[in-house]
Image (cartoon, rainbow, N blue to C red; front, side):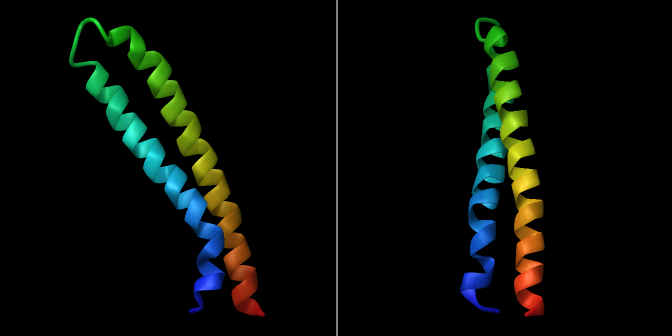
Length: 70
């Protein structure tokens, strides 16, 4: 498989990794009583980044599948 075919998947995967790391950061903020209020905002951002990455990944997979048929 050519590298150009997989190029549409690079940024969605990067967003999914960033969203996962942000979710880990959100969980780490619950360890301290002073940072519990930060949890809600960080968790919201991580969920949003994961959602955007997942939708973008689906579109990327469809694009890769179309390019593979040609």
